[in-house]
Image 1 (cartoon, helix red, strand yellow):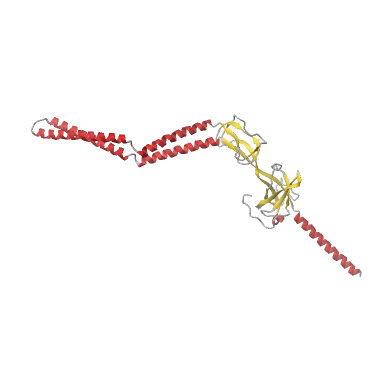
Image 2 (spheres, helix red, strand yellow; image 1 turned 90 degrees about the vertical axis):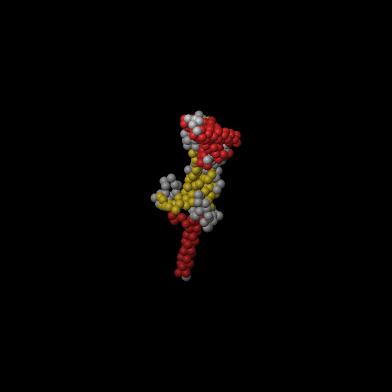
Length: 338
């Protein structure tokens, strides 16, 4: 009987130990806790062109919305360049229209009249020359007079030829090459005008996204070079958490896994998020990461996208991460940039 009782006690002990181990193991699986830091992107904003800073609309700590004007340069020099370029474009357009239209009818009519006039003069000079040829045979004029008549005829013929060629040029209009050159000159001037207009637009600084002004680096009246930082803006979206995971736990998370994110100031109201990226490369735990594991162990960096961020999340803030109870069991398709 004592042996039976001993066997039963041993059996209950083994079962109890197994249940305790199973419960402990399950609780450990469910209660995987990770640590990380809030990672908010910042952008340095500046003008693409140089100039004198004429207006700063916001100051440090102000909220800005995408598309809002936050600063301006004195754009008078650039507006003057626009006026010059616009005048050049207008001039070259008229020159091209002239070449495409050809010469005026009045110029062509004038050239035709000149041709007719010189044709009459040439006909008269020809008769005088022929008459001097006959008269020379009968000794009616000297050889010098005959030579003068021939020279006059040849000269008039040359002038007639020149008038006819000028008329042909006027009737034919400008060459194809001249028109092509005029079009190229106009295109170059239009490009210069577009560049000048773009510089006027670049004298206005626009907020690229919703955010908060962290730093105002310049003051009104400053002469800025192109690209000089005027504001540093902390973007409101996206807000990420940068965390690290040990290799044995790598199979427990995947892109799309839902997590709860706790901060020291909101222990009872966590943020929700999902894992957007897991690094394919192992690395040593960085000194800044807050974890109870050995710092020399290899970990994998991953990124959590916060689904409901607010202004309480600050750059570098330490957070605690727990797997959400409704986290999907299978990986989700996520965007590569997450």
